Each structure stands twice: as C-alpha cells, then as structure tokens.
Image 1 (cartoon, one colour):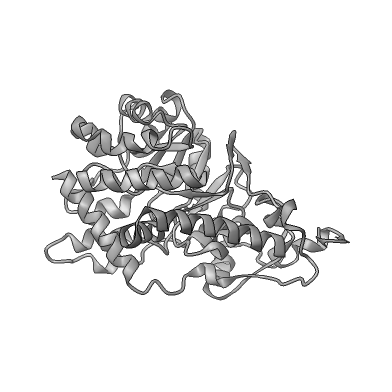
Image 2 (tube, rainbow, N blue to C red):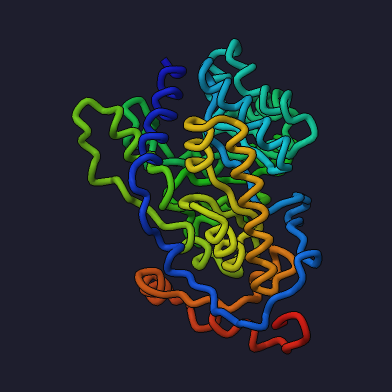
Length: 360
C-alpha cells in the first residue's frame, strides 16, 4: 500500500539522520574573513524576492510526506512550525491523494494550520495537468513543485521505468496549471544542462536538490528484499556543486540537500541560491523532540543566519553573493573539470570599496 510506503520513507529517513551525516561539499566552501566587514544587526533583512515571490526569510521547509495517518500528523506539526516562524513550506508528493482521495486531509492540513503562509503543492513529472490543478486547489497553493527522481524510481521496487515523457509533460503542466512551477530534484542534483532545459520549458525556479542529505537510493534499497542497489548509494551531484554549475543560467535557483546548519544556508546563498531548504534535519527534530523544538530550531537558524550576515557585512541574502569565498578540495576539482573559474569567487569584494561599517 502507498500509505505503508510513505511511513517506510519517514522511518528510513529518520534512521539516516540518526546516523553520522559527516562532511559534505559545503565544507569545501569557506568564507574569507574580513575583520572590518561587519555591519549593524538592525540593518540586516532576511527578506528575499525572486521570480515574482516575496518571502520573509530565505529558508524553507522542503517536501517531505503525506498520504497516511502518521504522515498527516507530521504535516500538521510542520505546518504549525512554518506558521509560527514565517518559513515557506512544501508538501510531499501528492500521488497518494490522486489514488485515494480519503487521504486528502493529510495534505490539506498544511494550509489549514498555516492559512497565511507560502505553501507549495507537489506532484511528479507524470502527473496530468488536471491532477496538478487538483493538487494546487487542495492546498490553495502559491506555487507547484514538480519533483524529478529517476534514481529513486530506478531503485524503488514499484518505481517507474519510463522517463522520456517527463520533459514534454513538465512543459504541459507549466502552461496549464495556473501557478508558478518549481522543479526540484529529490537529492541527486540538477546539472547546468538540466537547469537550462527547465528554463526553456518556462519553469519559474529550479530547486537543485543535491546530494548530501537524505539519500533516496539508500531508502529505496532498504525496501528491497536483496538490497541489491547498494552501488547507487551516494549517486549524484552535491548541492554546492549544482550551485557552482548553474552560475549565470538566467533562472532563479533554490538550494536543498545536505543543508545541516545556518552556515550551510549562508554558503548556499553566497553561491547564488535565492532560498535554501532543508527536510531531514527538521524531520529528525520533529520526530525526536516535537513541534515546539522544531519551532525553536527554525527560530534559532534564522537568528544565527542574521548574525552571520551581520558579521559578513551582508544586509540582505542577495548581498552574500558579493562576499569572498574559497572553493577547495573535491569541489574545486569538479569546477576545474566543468570549466568553472573558482578564483572569481575569492575576489568578489575587490570590485567594491571599503567604507565605515563593512566591505562593499
């Protein structure tokens, strides 16, 4: 049953989070410390505007779940946390709703508990335009996420095996759904070439969804009797690599996948993300400690992000793209192979001038 699969996904995702997450390629992005760059905290705004969206903060709760009694409770608590902190939130895949409308409440609770927040519905790339509209209507959604996940489907025992129709169907949904469309990967990353395809389809935003967080190849392999797809665990491009690969593509991007703390949020913003999402770390907090702890975590992340921006002399999230960063290690090797000049990121502040209260 699909409800059992959704519960399995939650259980296996939390188990991953309880394991040692360790380093990822965000650790190979380092801010150059300029000791007199700081500004005053009241001058810092976390608001971000992109692609016609205005978000009060550049952090969002990315797609997780829905479709069963347990996941409905999770979505209720996630929505409460989003409401209390002003953080945008995305639904998990709504395929279960299309198969059984009795589970509609496990998704609509996101809007019911968060009536004034920014909410995204979520469908897969095979959904019809009618289903996409139904998903948006159910949540009174401000935008629609289409998730793409060929690796997950390949490992999933009951997954799809036909992918050639995805590109034209995304185009049909973009034209017919009536709200802005964001296309996201589920943890394997979007290359520059893929982002360019999405741009040409009229997609409003690309959520890069890179490697480093929840590994859905590992999750689906854990659901297989023989666990015979272990070799695909760790597949894909990291979120940091995707951000560097997608420079100057003329399409706003969001960064999710492997975001562990506020410094990763700042790093992603500095590499060009318009907003930064996380799922697994917030799910772990909710499942282990409850909704009040998640509200505290989100509030703390936003406060710490503002503190980092104050220290770095960035009055807005977009201003972080003018801060100097070093690209090192395997991430630098990736850039070299892809023809990306990493030296430019280390000298961005040199184009400005130094004034009282910060380096511009």
